Amino acid sequence: MGSVSLKVGDGTARFTKSTLCSSALNLVMLFSVLTTNLFALYAFKYSSKTHQHPIEHPHKNISLISEHVSLILREINFSQKKLAKMEKELLGYDSIDISKPNIANELKLFLQHQPLPLGKDSKSGITEMVSSVGHSCDKSMNLLSQYMDYKVGGICPDDWSLAQKLILRGCEPLPRRRCITKSLSKVGLFPFPLSLWKQVSDKIVTWSGLGCKNFKCLNSKKIGSNCVGCFDLVNGTEKKRFVKARGKNDFLIDDVLALGNGGIRLGFDIGGGSGTFAARMAERNVTVVTSTLNVDAPFNEFIAARGLFPLFSSLDQRFPFYDNIFDLVHAANKLSDGSNMEKLEFLLFDLDRILRAGGLFWLDNFYCVDEERKSHLTRLIERFGYKKLKWIVGEKSDATQTGKSQVYLSAILQKPVRV
Image (cartoon, rainbow, N blue to C red; front, side, top):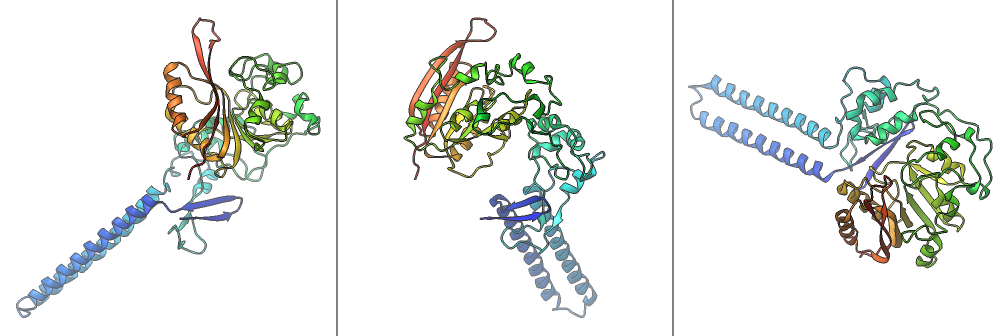
């Protein structure tokens, strides 16, 4: 069944008919019809019997029939209300209670149900428009209300750190719509492709909510295991990444592209740090979208300043791409926290969805925690039936120098054609 998309203002409400919802509603409707008919049959049969002695109880017969009719009407009314309630519950209409105190008026207005302008939709059966908002927002109502407390038509509050906190709690997409983003003067941007390896100016980045206020400070800190000095494009290690191996687990870009037989044009990079993978691919005429958040650093602004495409998105939602789009998916270390294999399974299925048949999945230095996790990951990958073009497992000493080794997996996998 298709979907109905209605453009309202600057937001879009989408409704898709759910099989579960349809089945439940049909069952309730069937029950209501059967119950109503049984009551009607009983009423008329009882009325027929009493008509044999019309002189004895004329008023009693009329009263009984009236009671049965009233009962039938009450049953129909109850069934209709129950159907409406089930429809809203199954479609998620009432996932967030906007009647709670201290809820921002803008949030109430955004979540308020709006009737369809032309009445009930014939395909989906939907009668109202419902705004899209993350289901986990209900667990962070104080933060969400704070985020939505802004002047409509004015400048958006400088609180991207609050927005990111909501996203990391599963509250996405965010509902803020009607304010104007504060702009920064992008003085100092370089033309492409010169921009790929020129140092980004501190002045074109929003530093609010961050401990560091310049890139020199960031380069002196370790920001996750995949970003150590990753904002230094001139003197740092970024200049050598993907073109010079640091160990047996590191694959070179040219070697991987050769495995694609010239068919690599579009790529998707998960956890791409400062965008160096996308930069190396851009030098080889491959367009790469880099998915990242601004955790402890302005990754999105830095990537954009290099003339590359950042995607501000967490790994907890379905990727906003159609099926079989990308020729290559690159997933760096820390694809998951190492402990939640169910979450990793959801992620891998979505990556498989957006990768075309014959495309390459590059698993780059995936941290396996231990042998058990590596075996679990291996079994999960084998479920997809990918062809293993490269598969290397290596061990490294942990950063705390305790002597305990860490297991890393690097692989190049080719998605099969499925009929």
